[in-house]
Image 1 (cartoon, rainbow, N blue to C red):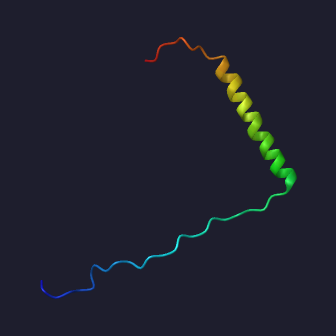
Image 2 (spheres, rainbow, N blue to C red):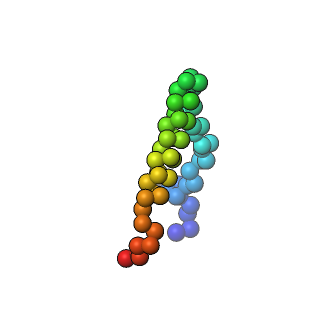
Length: 57
């Protein structure tokens, strides 16, 4: 076991891959922002109608 073998070599380090970027028109960006805002409003309205005094099981 004195000889060194190439069985367990360290792998060369790779640079992390860059994320993809997508260009979107301003109209689509605004529509997406409106969609997010509408979803948040729906979640808040739903949360208001839940009973808060119900004990957890």
